[in-house]
Image (cartoon, rainbow, N blue to C red; front, side, top):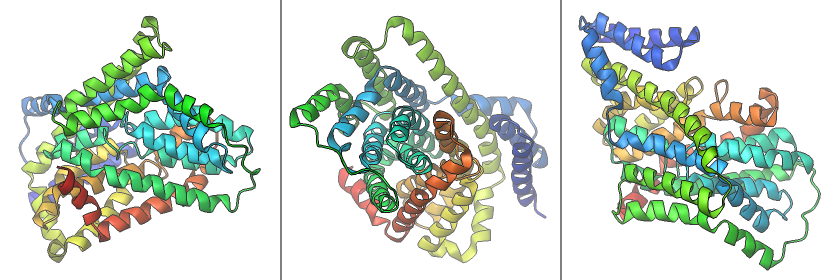
Length: 431
């Protein structure tokens, strides 16, 4: 067996073993990278330390803590709540209206925070008690909210796109643009799936539609929240600021709105918000540091070319190769969270995709979309855990409720494999 193949097997086996015993993912990445260095006779502790520092020494990665902070400020400062209240004013009176509220609010909030966990927590905290009170089946409601939450990694500004772009040296702005159409299609897909679910759900008929004045008042209350994505996306599209600077703008905008316009946040409250954002940032950045060690050793072992040789004739058939890699990522997503999946596998898979003639931005969108679906795929399903925890529901109920919406997302994934122009054409047009 070649040293490259041995290094690859050590990497996979080591990672599975360390995850199996419950070791933190960042530590597992560092240790598997060190094991590969030993197998390749390239052991150097100073080099390992330098790679860990290099993993977080990146200007574009500064977007991550600021987007995390923006999400925390949105939830604490009443911005998220006003979005949900506006959606309820317009569609809440329809039969099953709270489900449509969840979908609409998920799409709008996704265009502000870029964090699946933050959006899901906000939606579940506000909407699940209302759904329970109005007699909605809790498993279906929880599944819908979890499914809506994972639109956040796709619609810009997306934190996973930032991490993917930094990890693979892909244009973050182009990745942001690539997520607009798929994100909207995800929302449309959820609407269709929810309508189909309503056929088998016993709910009272819709109530009386609120007066136009009430609905317009809700829009006026949410005005500053609705202005946020326009500023962020418009600023990046016009070249006023970069994606990294956009994250700073988003955080500062959310802070100003929460403190001085909505006045639901005080100076005293800012401290705990910063602490929560710092804790989440530390977890993500440590993952980036650990992944850089493994990524460096993967590159040193020339594993992309090794895998290309194993894939053989599929490299000459881009759609078949894409289908094979997406299937592999679906399986990986059942065990790994989105961020580790990007950090570990994106540097390995992207060179193979590019060699097959697959557009790197399209591949990045598909990679992140697949990883986002993994957030609602058992047994790990981080977003499922958030909904189960907030709603105090057994995990098996949430898994049962998410299945119809998970199937919808898989159909969308297949649609993009068959028709990649749905992603590439808007990117080419909007660039």
